[in-house]
Length: 316
Ligand code: A2P
Image 1 (cartoon, helix red, strand yellow):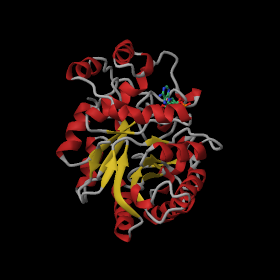
Image 2 (spheres, rainbow, N blue to C red):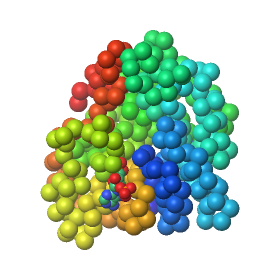
Image 3 (cartoon, rainbow, N blue to C red):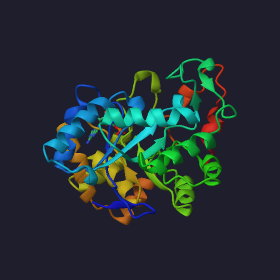
């Protein structure tokens, strides 16, 4: 399995298990199974609401001798309601306590969006805080203090565009930017920029996240796993469309975190790490880009919100 090498030479397996939308009652088994079949990288977040159950899986995997802590890469994310500098440490400590870990390998600012602590998840305009009230730099500096304290080995961000990365770069560039990425949305300009600044990238929703809530879907959205070129290439390799999508990301040197709670698909997705695609196949896949976002950010622009989609996504 290829690795992503960080500035201090720490290595993260390029393929990890995603846990967004992994239901309670299922995620324990998914994580245990994933570790058992060879996953060494698990992507979590406080807002997914399942870190306590993932923590039980980690505890039992360590206890059973399936893996040692130092051989597992664990990422988690700071939720939007904990952006104020005094809220960062408690949020990170809660995640560590839920995950039953002493440290994270990587901690990400989940969105460049601030929300009132009392709101948790924002549903109305009044739930938000502006970036004038809580600047991204304030949150970032508080995260870097936690890195110094050893609660997380690496610090990064998620859903950041170039201008926001530049802002943080005046203090210190993040080590990771996790964004939605797949052949419909390759984000090449952002990927080139990140490479030039030594920022690694992780692709979320690499399979199109079709299990997200219906309210977060549009009626006429494309089905990533059923794109004809993906199906055709999969067939020619005796592989599955999911494996082709995962391999496409690995071929770009971009970490990828497909989510599954199904044992067969967990193993199938890991096997994609050994699927070699030809340059010509990669070019064909690149041809399907349309700029389509499955996670379009519309939840952040409810009536009265100080945020707009133009603030969130840079035009390519
Ligand atoms: P399940 O958890 O039942 O396997 P994403 O990673 O883009 O968010 O996509 C996750 C969705 O893709 C889930 O619905 C998940 O279902 C499904 N999925 C995961 N692996 C595969 C696979 N190998 N083939 C088809 N669907 C998959």
